Length: 296
Image 1 (tube, rainbow, N blue to C red):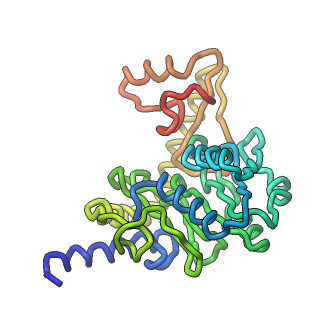
Image 2: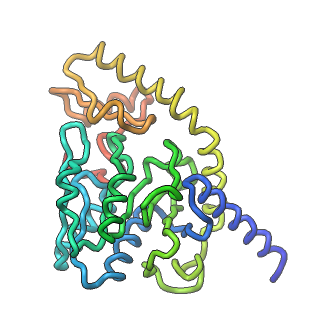
């Protein structure tokens, strides 16, 4: 009721509209979360709660740990998990995917763009195939949002996750898109925040910052796909030409414009990273969520 709170509420509504506009959604389909991991967990657990009679999940072996580790955890609780394989270019095997969809499948969760190679999955096609069999479809689009055009009004995607810091918003803010009419069971139960779909005090500063970041991402998307892509390609071409025994991992054409993943034979990745750090170059040998892991 008071003016001070009212002005903040207005900014939150604007941020919801800005986030929705970036992915072609309606503002009431946007739930603000703490991060992409929370969004992923909320999507999968909600789908399983909505269809307790279904005990099957379809995903891939190259998903972010927020999905893959959760699926491994759910498998220990009796759920059946099918990981659709990828080929040497990181492309999804669509024939195996089609055979994996069964009447017992509660949800499909596939990433829009890989978080390490940038390779794009055919999400629109995969979501359409799931809808034909009345199966919920979720995509972890953390890497893709703001890098490539996304219009959920014209898709069969039921739920989508994004994370603010991938758009240059602060860490600690994310979004879960839930298509109108999709049955949803909250992961966090408490107050009536986020239209009763996510309890807990809103991260107002983070939400407002994310809204602005979404607006800026839409404005600069063409630059991502021209100037940034050109810089990435120049870097890769020069490394391949000058450094022996190197290769680009993943499909070089079907990927987001800001990501490169390069293998150097006969040299440990950690050694390269230490030397690059001394030169002021920031790089990693895997995603932040796999830091400390020796798994490839």
